[in-house]
Image 1 (cartoon, rainbow, N blue to C red):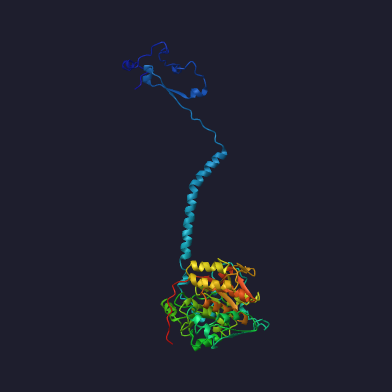
Image 2 (image 1 turned 180 degrees about the horizontal axis):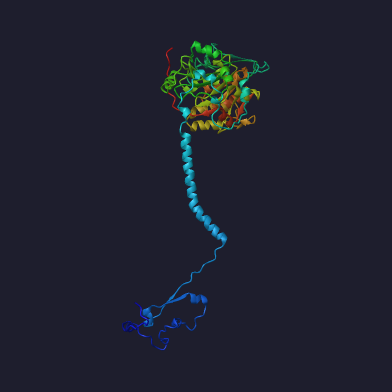
Length: 500
């Protein structure tokens, strides 16, 4: 309890003696009536209101009795004036520090949800695949080219493609009117030994001499050339049923797989008109048939797998499977004697356009007879030779033999020919079967047999030597628009000779 009058504490006063000395301020007893008189004001202290507000004096009852005064100086916090723009920047910084990680996390979750949705098979994928035997009744939308890929080529509208017809057979105003293929003609015996050991000429190709090679490049009304199938026992045997089927094809899309190398990709993007008028033919050997049967792709009783008519080839003429593939690739006119047009597609690719529309866009519209893609990486055959050796696709010795012959024949190391690249990429070949084009393909095939099987090296040579009209080298983007490329799936197995 507090009393009305504070009593002095002797003990407390004993421990706190009064200040003495000349510098000590005079001691004044406490006064209850005027506590403000207890403040000690230094003589030099300015009387500022801010200073007075910064000093506080606490006096307890005991201190009143003892005369102790506790003085606490309160520090004023200086408040710096912050502009509105600085406050906005600070607010934006805090918002960004919190909001940016949140935004990135939201985007990551959204992307994850989208990818999981895209990769999840739709309900339609669980349905059984359509029967290709009844493929003609499928809607055009079901066979539309997959993906929104922008086209380099301008194709006709689907309505026009549906009614597209083959053009009339052109007149005979061409410089080459006839190509005669050597069959069992006698050859110069003195020249044969030089080829039997160092080249791959055989009873299938015939034994072309260097003199005959040079003579074949001289254009005239009638030209006699080697062009495969030299002897009926030379190899590449097909059944009589298959021969009859091939004889009835007017337009054909061709591919092949020997040695079990690649899968069979079904074509897409065609119209019902093309299904009725175009043959799709795939040449296989027994190794490829066995490999495809392991994948569940068995040839039907009608010799079909989807849209492809499978033709089984026996007694392949070359030990090099790549060279065997050049037969349907380069001399398809020898396999389809009545065909007017053919389109070659490598086995690693899926054909994704309407065949008649491709003929119209690449041949008929530009009055061309042969169309293939420019090379995507190089322009010179001599640069291509270096790349072939570097990638171990041929030995340096056989490449050098070919280049020596081409230099001797005056082929320059030029990167352009008639304004286009001098090098072609031949995974897609669109052509007619006129005498001029047939001669070009025969000479190209003979070069591949004589030298390396890399047809990129020999194409520029034949093009410069023969200079045929109507060769169309289309840009790389157009080739990518024609096919979907899947690459080679498995390594080609060695050749297996079949007993006939």
